[in-house]
Length: 246
Ligand code: NAD
Image 1 (cartoon, rainbow, N blue to C red):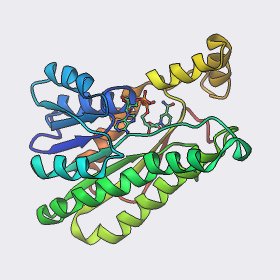
Image 2 (image 1 turned 180 degrees about the vertical axis):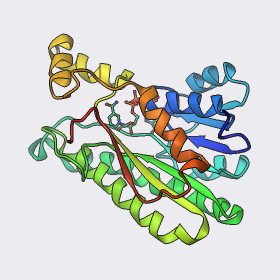
Image 3 (image 1 turned 180 degrees about the horizontal axis):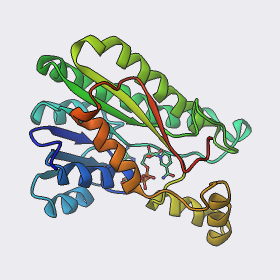
Image 4 (image 1 turned 90 degrees about the vertical axis):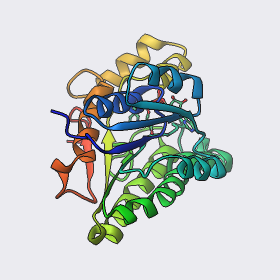
C-alpha cells in the first residue's frame, strides 16, 4: 500500500543509518523524497537507486545553504530531521565547544530547518514534522551522554512546542526516541573504544532484548508519522528502544 503517494519528504542526514532507511522506506511508500546529507556524493548515489528520490548535499549547520535548498525544491509535506552527533562524556568531559556543537547540530539545526519549511506547510494547510531525538534525552539518562542527552531533550521540548503552536493549522510534529540502533556512526563509536567486540557486548547488555535496533525498525514509525494514518497524533515522543526505558 502506497500511503505516502503525492507527498514530498525532505530528509536530513539521509546517507546512513536511520535517515537512509527512512528515506528508502518513504520512497517505497510513494513519497517523492529529497534526500540530503553533508556527504552529497553518498545521497546522490542512493537516489540513483530510487526513481522518486533526489539527492542533495546539505550541511544542516549552514543556514544559508538550508535557505537556498528550501527555496529551490517543491513545497515539503514531510520533514524528517535526522542529523545528530554523540559526544561521549560526562559534564566534566564537556567543554563549551562540545556543548555548542551538540546543541548546534542536534537542536539548533532542527529549529533552523523547521522554521524554513513551516511557511510552505502553513500555505498547504498540512504537514508532518518528525524529529529524531533519542531515548537518552528527557526520557532517560545514560552514562557519558551529558551534552548529547541535554541536546536531545531540547528536541523533545521543541517538538511539543511546535505541535502546540500549529495544531489548528493542520501541522503535526512528533519525535522518535530510538534506543541503540545499528549504524555506521555507532560502529565508529564502538571502534573508537579500542575494543569493538567488548563495546558491542556492553551496548547489547543494556538492551533488555539482548540486541540492537535496526534502522528499518525506526523507519517504519517514521512512515506512520509521515502519513495520514497518524492524523490524530501530535506532540508525542515515541520510544523505540527494545524495552530499554521500560
Ligand atoms: P549515522 O550517525 O550513522 O549517520 C549520520 C549521517 O549524518 C551521516 O550520513 C553523516 O554524513 C550525516 N551528517 C553528519 N553531520 C551532518 C551535517 N552537519 N549535516 C548533514 N548531515 C550530516 O546515523 P544514525 O546513527 O542512524 O543517527 C541518525 C540520528 O539518529 C541522529 O540524530 C542520532 O543522534 C539519532 N539516534 C541514533 C541512535 C543510534 O543508536 N544509532 C540512537 C538514538 C538516536
